[in-house]
Length: 336
Image (cartoon, rainbow, N blue to C red; front, side, top):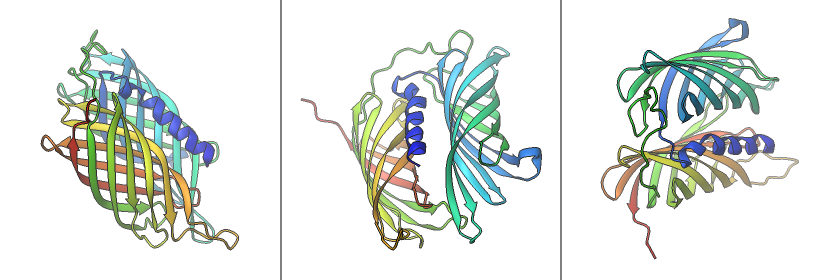
């Protein structure tokens, strides 16, 4: 578990280095399709959120959330970190890409007792995508992934979706990829946000509860934020967690700073009043990795709306997703 969590944090930091370096080309897409088990014996649905960052012409990195649906005995999802080589076609109106990297997964498996276990692991992932640009900002994408873990099921996913080009220039054109002009350094102001939403425990029954959180956010450097959050995951019957999270974030802004996107990671110090007993002892206090994605939009000079998706990676089969929407107030940092 510790080895897996460490790898997740390091890969997240590596793949979002492009955000902190303020590189110009970013694509965000949402796709849906089907998952087929090896030899296409069983199939189910899939959906994927993909963020792709161009580093050089024809070379990119990406981070994705991939949900493989519900195959018999397996509810697997996770994050894929990949490097891509691409070939523009038809004067940049289309592109084909081949990628490969690491898939960090969480697989909820059925136990003989009828309970479930959250199996954490890593697997190689190989991908192919074809992209066609409708306009200067929108595109469609076909994505095929092959996931081949050493000690879990091998699957192929195929999905079709839509995306938006978030780069400062228009869509990629020959000779222009990566040539956008410099923009002023962005440092997040002070923010306090109050959230409400839902927590979903990653078991075969997906127990849910109302969740709440409060967050203080402050820019530490250009495109780097720090947050301190109080989180209450509600009472979904099999856990009752609440605690304090401290995270570092890579962030970037688009459309004249009206939209911001970020990924964060850090420790979550929590108390679980329903932590499973071990050797007749109960230790409700513990620490777990918390990995998050956030999207915020300005409503006015001081007010903003923020959507955050947290993943709690526990060590005792109680992983959870926390989906939160909040209203925040922003004010400038004081200058010496």
